[in-house]
Amino acid sequence: MAEVIGVRFKDVGKVYFFDPDGKQLKKFDKVIVETARGVECGEVATENREVEDEKIIHPLKKLIRIATEEDLKIVSQNKEKEKKAFEICLDKIEKHGLDMKLVEAEYTFDNSKILFYFTSDGRVDFRELVKDLASVFRTRIELRQIGVRDESKMIGGLGMCGRPLCCSSFLGDFQPVSIKMAKEQGLSLNPTKISGTCGRLMCCLKYEQEAYEHLLRVTPKVGAIVETDEGRGVVVETNLLKGKLKVNLDRRPGAAPQTFDRHDVKVIKDGHIKIEKAELEALKGIES
Image 1 (cartoon, rainbow, N blue to C red):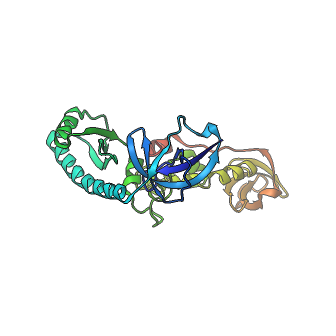
Image 2: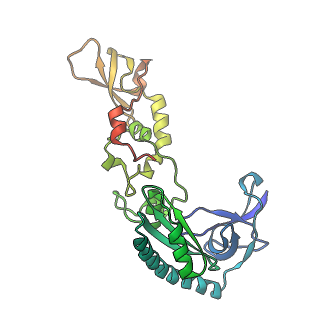
Image 3: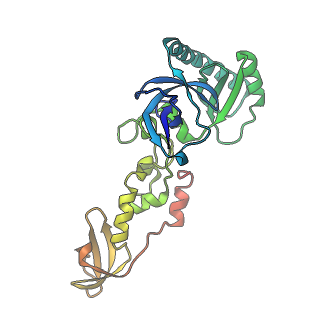
């Protein structure tokens, strides 16, 4: 076990562990720490606590100091410099005719490096751009290609629910989301209805998936052959949350389906959820 504090460097970024070096810190305290990118100013996300050694990436770096007024002034100055760097980089990208979209410029705390984040549909040869930027800023330049999910996280916005995007308001890490989840939750496989602002599957499909997986285990699926009080039949529709099934009874082939509770039927042969090739083709590109 080791005592650690959790520090994040962006408003809704990943939390990294650091050795508090004997200091007791509170949530939202600003601290100066050494990272793989150099010295950085971050915010305490989790206060002092003990964690298992297996959860720590060694060596665990120590806290340098609690941020001073002078440190916070440097952070504020860097924010202003980032705006100017962003505009300069945009001009340089246009000058070099590169097919890339600049998303954000970021100075490290000690000004030893400037990072430019961009998106692009393919690979970009930005070697000349880096040389050009280095001659302007006289410091190390790093261009980092990111995905559309990361772009949405950085820029922010509103989702179709009317609330701020999950990724830019509270999600520290992206969770894998699949078309299978949407199918299992009975959602329409219409790209405009199940994809977010980034154009990929909505992160919120993950939130209730565990509950749906449980319900699918205890509820006969569409196509299942079941035994009911009214005789044998085939399940043609399910309501997982209510636990209701609509069954076409064998002895009433032309009649409307009857509704049963899932507890009142016995499964003879269960069905399975299928995703048609045409559906997959229509949804190509929104899963990754």
